[in-house]
Amino acid sequence: MGRIYEKDEVLFAVVWIAVYCMVSIPIRGAFGDESAAMLVGLSAVAAAVFAFVRKRNLEEKYGLVKWKGKAGEYLFFIPMLVLMTGNLWGGVGIAYDGAGQFFAVLSMLLVGFIEELLFRGFLFRALLKKDPVFVAVTISAVTFGIGHIVNLFAGQGGTETVIQVFFAIAWGFLFTFVFLKSGSLWVCIAVHGMVDVFAKFAADESRSDNIYMVITIMVSAAYCFYLSRKPNAVEPGRKDG
Image (cartoon, rainbow, N blue to C red; front, side):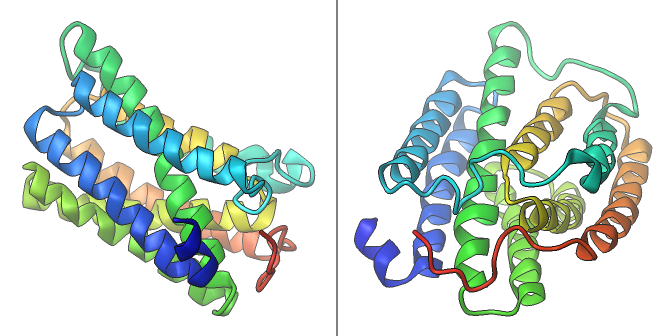
């Protein structure tokens, strides 16, 4: 991976995304999110990615640092925190029995860490080195959303997947702007993880899901517009690392 990183950071990000998909999709399809196998597979990917970042002292480049500036400048991240609870708006339920729910919660937290580091860290920072900021933000967000199409291969329904794609694109823009403006991924990682965790405690209510998606798109657009007027903490074209 080191040689790929030094030669082409975009390719490096794509390779890691492919590795993540090759590990998670077959396990999800065969055993489900509630399985110990899923937790072990995601733990291995997370450990490998984090080890690479630590070995090369890339924590600041990829946002594994405290955000820069005052929380008030980002409206205390309240729009994200409100949207984070959306999966519970239609009621609360338990997705799995016994230890399965515990395994699923831990797995979803790992998904938040891995996906933020891959899409907002590796991919977005690589794109910033060669593309204008808005182009890099858009590619990172849309790629993140479209990437959820792979859930079809894990047995997820087509309608649910399409909804998830648009939902993920909205979150992708929001997370990317927060990283761009704050210089930190930790808030994004925490919120992303909890969105996925709350999905495992959500009642099956399609009407509230649709309302949640619409509100997410609207709030994300407004919050991104607000953040776009703030100075960048992540410097476009920076060659660090």
